[in-house]
Image 1 (cartoon, rainbow, N blue to C red):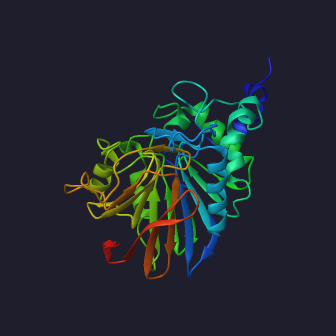
Image 2: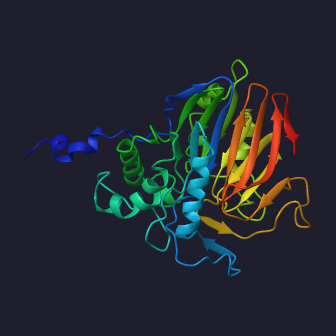
Image 3: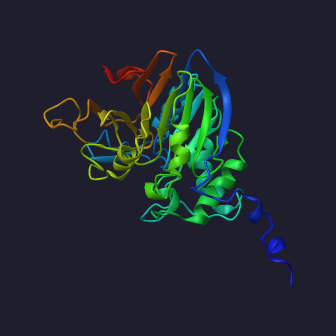
Length: 327
């Protein structure tokens, strides 16, 4: 009988998915200005008709709207693009990402290529991705699906996913990408806290797929928020997907941007508005296809939400000593 390693072939060569390791990778380092485009929930394949235009409360992008969004992202001329999970919505009712044995196998060609590969090709910036709940079959861990996407990223130079959690040195910005499918109690909190310490005026942008708080959807999900409060980890900005709209608020002193409408929209109340009340009300929110742009300078961190054609919708800015910031 052949040795197990020979039988498995390239399977053993793929990185071992881990939530305990936190590798740091470098990108094009800038000290004067850094721009990051934040997309979320980009993995739905286009549909024929625009259900949003027909007044539906939940809809997906068409080929035309997807092309417009990609063109808008390219026009941002960003230093990095961050995609905050749900990279691929699969073929079954729960829309779980299919498992694959190799990055070029039949399932990868059928699902990963059109949902992820075609989106990131030609964006003009390195793409850093996190895994969402659909990417792991709605489990905390799905090692087969994790390895599938890690292998796919290995085979595509523009994609970066060195492990389930990692950080990126962009010079003026440290980007920390977390796997929020796994409960925070299982994270390497000590390593994350160390990376989240700003040095020499750098900005810390941290995030993953799941929210620290949103209104009108996922509003009962608070585990990450509790963990950040308990551990004292205070990023300058938290970014996430998961909820299929654009929304922003400052919660317990942590600015949080939801950008989860790259390919799906869930129609909910806009903020400010009559429904946006209470101590945890968002400062702003809109149900539309779109993305967020993070612009960092040595003194300010600016967040701009844009629609699927690149039109600016709302802008917020903070300084190092003012997490609440100003509209």
